[in-house]
Image (cartoon, rainbow, N blue to C red; front, side, top):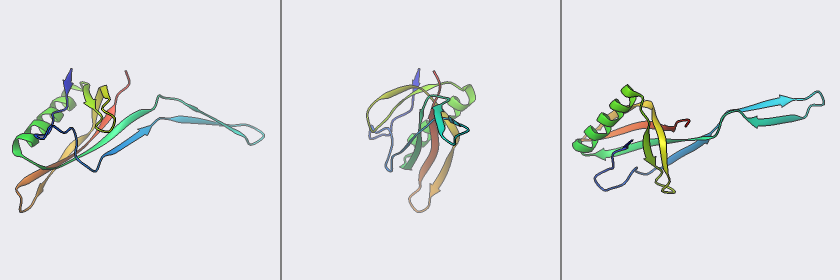
Length: 118
C-alpha cells in the first residue's frame, strides 16, 4: 500500500492543520414532536492539506502521487500529524490545485484527503 510523500523536513503536513469528522445522520420526528437521530454511515475523517513554499522535487512528488491515486482510485495510508495514527484507507477527494508564489519561485499545493470506507 502506498503512503503520501513526506516533505523534505520529514513532516506530513504544514500548518494550519485542518481536520474534520463527518457522518450522515437521519432524524425521525414523532407525532408528539420529539425527535430521534441515528448515524446512517460511520463517521469518517477528512484532512485539508495546504502545502506552501515547496521545492520543485516535493511538488513533483506530490503531484505524481495525487495523479496516480486519482487515476487508479487506489487507497493509501495517511498518518494524522495530530495524533500519529495511521489511517490505511484514504483517498484524494478533490483534485490538487497548484499555485505559484510570485517572487519566491516556489509552489503551493492544496487538496483534500478523505478516509474511505473499509
